[in-house]
Amino acid sequence: MAQPQHPAIAAFEVEEGVLRIGGIPLPRLAERVGSTPFFAYDRSLLTERVAQLRRNLPTDVHLSYAIKANPMPAIVQHLAKLLDGFDVASAFEMKTALDTGMNAERISFAGPGKTREELSQAFAAGVIIHIESESELSAIVKLARDQGIRPPVALRINPDFALKASGMRMGGGAQQFGIDAERIPEILSDVPFEDVDFRGFHIFAGSQNLSADNIKMTQEQIVDLVLKLADHAPVPVRHVNIGGGFGIPYFPKDKPLDLKVTGSYLAGIIPRLRAKLPEARVIVELGRYIVGECGVYVSRIVDRKQSRGTTFLVTDGGLNHQLAASGNFGQVIRRNYPVAIGHRVTDPTEETVTVVGCLCTPLDLLADKVALPRADVGDLFVVFQSGAYGLTASPTAFLGHSRPEEVLI
Image 1 (spheres, rainbow, N blue to C red):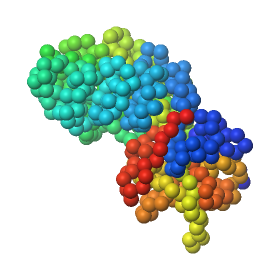
Image 2: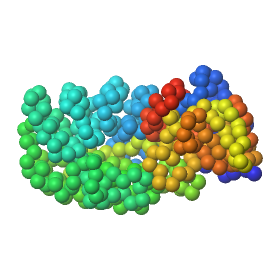
Image 3: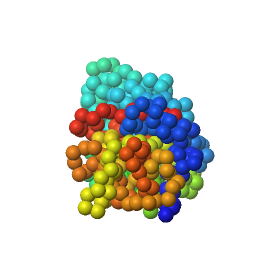
Image 4: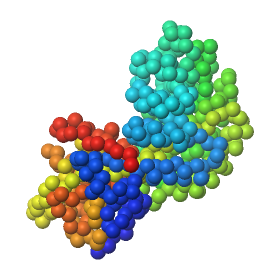
């Protein structure tokens, strides 16, 4: 029987049942790549996603890409032409961002546990350092004095609230991210501003949210907190990163985020911030929402077997490349990502199968009891929603299989 298409699948071009990436039929693309598994990213879908954001978000909001979502250099280079900045979380990501020619002051460096070497590189580059703890602030001040450099910095805040119903909470309660909001007034009174160039605040409360109302509520709370804390800053606030949290639909019951409503809500919130902080560069930082839906993970079926009433399709890929699809990247309850057989995308389903990888662990599960057209050895199995937190978020060294290729088409 025919199944309703997941919006992630429907976004891609399909011709006579064959999936096309960047206009290239998947079997031909597999031949060009030369081996499976591989990740393929559709450049046109990536470009269109940024265009959707531009159409729907306020024009005076700056869009930044969180490189951790997918640091593939070709993707970062492409996005450098379309976006206003980058957020990085390591020296490697910082180099990837700087290599695009993006102005260093449009790059922010966040994340706990920055080393002295990383901080020195950030100083030299001139990127804005988002400070995650009081001890990190002390280390930055000491390093600044030692090196005679006055680095641009912002304080990352751990608010006393979180983004409701988010896939991952990044604020509220005890967190390794940011400085507790109640500590900020005292810290600001002690910051040696002659040693550091204080720019403002970064507040990120959660990720992977599909509710415009929840995002609105959190953005309102963020703005309230920023305005409150700005009263304690002895210099004008010029940098306000309000995070993002925009989610994408992975599972059958997920409804895509209403970007138009989200943008209209934000347009009603920003003027209050602008009225009090006219010099502030307001940043929405997104990762998964920008790149997640443009990518697929492709593996080849290498075996088909029966075991006590269950049909298993065994592929040459697995959780060592696409950990998130296996359910081992933070899912509380494992659910299937949207999947398809690459040359029979629109065909009626004929059987229920379990698709596994080639690793020696029962955790290596790409799709459990999923309805698909009949597939045989040699066919290409496709996992959608693979543009974010795929390859670099996976244990590629496990069992020593080859690292898959990545292509931007």
